[in-house]
Structures are given as C-alpha cells and as structure tokens.
Image 1: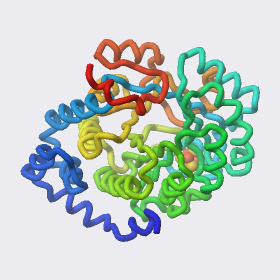
Image 2 (image 1 turned 180 degrees about the vertical axis):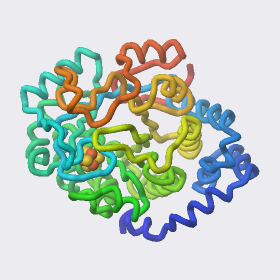
Image 3 (image 1 turned 30 degrees about the horizontal axis):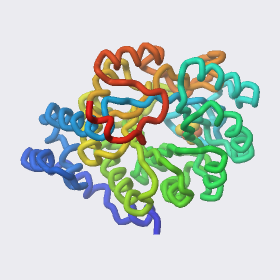
Length: 374
Ligand code: SF4
C-alpha cells in the first residue's frame, strides 16, 4: 500500500466542492483551533478565507517564530545539467526544445562549488533534468563525493530513483530530496507530460514512499502552481503529507511553492494565482503544520519575497542561477526559467536582517526550538 492507492480513493471534484463550500464560519473555526485538520486546511485555502488574510498571516508568523525562531536558512541550487529525456509543457529543459545542452564534468562541478563557497552557502541543492543515461546513478556516484566537501547539507532534485539508489546516495552524503508531483489531476498530468519516464504518474507519486523507505532525512514536496486548480492540488498535497507523516515519521518534510514562470517553449498558466492567494496558501500550510519547512525560491519577485518571509517561510534560495555552470561562468541561453528576484544573496540577507530575520547559510530547520525565545 503506497500513497498511490490512497490517492485513488480521493475524488478531485469532491475535494473542490468541499473547498468552495467553505463559509466564513468554517474559516473562523479553523483559525480558532489549536491544531488543525485537513478539513480546516480546506477552509483556509477557500475563497471564503481570502477575507481573513491578515489574521491568517499573523498566526502563521507567530507559529513560525515559536518553532523556528527568527531564522531563515539559505540554500543554493547547483544545476549539473540541462539535459532531459522528458517533454513537459511548462519547462525550458524539455527535450524537444532546441537549446544548447550541457553536462558539467568534474572540473566544472568543482569550479561551481568553489564559486558557491565564495558566496558563503553551505546548503546545496543539486539539480538536473531527468536523463538516466547521461545524468543517472553512474554520474551521481561521481558527483556526490566531489560536492559533499562543500555542502554541510546536500539536497537533490533529479529524476525519481529506486529505493536502493537512494540508500546508496545517502551513504555518499545525500541529506534531502525534492520531488514535486506537479499536479494530482490525472488528466492534466497526462496533458502536460508528453514524453519520457515522467509520464508515469504512479512512479512519481510513489517516490516519497521510496525516500521514506530509504531513510532520507528530508523529503521536499510541492505542486506546480498555475498548472491546475491550485486549491485542489494543495489539498491533495496536504493529504499526501498527512499520509507520509504517519507512514514515514522518521523523515522531515518541506513544502515548496513553485509558481509557473515564463520559459523557453511557451508558458502555460491555466490557473493563475495572485500574490495574495500565494500568501494565503503559505499561511494555511503553516497553520496546518507548524513543523513543516516552507521553502521559497527566486522565481518570486523581491517585493513578494520580502513580504512572504514574514508569514511562514523557513528556507529560501537567493542569488540563484538556473543554468549549469552559472556561478563560475554565466550563459543565459542555458537557463531553465527566468528568476524574478535577481538580488545577490548578500543583498537579500541584508534586507531580511533589517526586517528582523537572521539568515543562516545552511539548513536551519533542525536547530533547537529554544531559538524561538528571542
Ligand atoms: S520539468 Fe523536469 S522533467 Fe520536465 S522537462 Fe523540465 S527538467 Fe525535464
């Protein structure tokens, strides 16, 4: 029994109706509870809750400071390759896009790591397209020992792997894996994943189960906001996290909030999400789960990030490049997507420190809760 079987029992339409039927009284009840259920989460992400944004954001900030202190952990994505054997309708790395392709070799990876170390980062996220032959286990076995000396905390965002592969990567220093379902809507998933292994929705959906079985410290989840109804997808994701917390309780979890951005090959934002709605969603997650890490990338604008940092975010990238080799030698034509907050990491840190948020340059989430006494 995996989450895939659990998901098969969930009805997208019914979840949508539950969310849209929520009333102001449901939202107020959810807000007043000391611990919230999935039913409360449905109310908090509903259209009815849009009028309660201020109290939701204030409570989200209170809970975040209580658990995590006035601290945000910085991480940096290191793109190893833009090769990909999939076609996703929303991504510049899709195999049918005629872009320049690059796989970093050993010397280039070390040059990237040196450049990243000079910036001060100790938490790295290795990113690849999904290409089993040129960037599969053989490549990872070579790369992790090169990168690990530069990373106090090492995460990966690559193609879904088998349990045994994750177990092996843990012995090479892997701490966390990000794997976003993109959407839990089966027809929409099929519509946007046109070629390659990623078409196998079940294989992807069961990846967090394999990560839990492999004993990976942290599992990062998310949906691609804008691809489908973000409310239904987020409630599905909340079910997924709830299932994982019960089954694989030894692992920690994070939620990311990728909103679709323009990319090479077109932009498919079927269900646009406003800034206020994204703040509502981030706040609702914190109200549902005071322990979960909430992560925000440079896809978002500086104005948005400066505001969102106050309502639940605990991890953020800054000064990111989304191209292989982009820290040692920038070539914009290799980028996966255009970043929106183009400030340097030092600028972001200084701005957030002025807002009373301390930045740590590694994974901050396992710090003791006594930090919250500030
Ligand atoms: S989203 Fe991932 S799998 Fe899809 S084309 Fe981009 S890199 Fe490849």
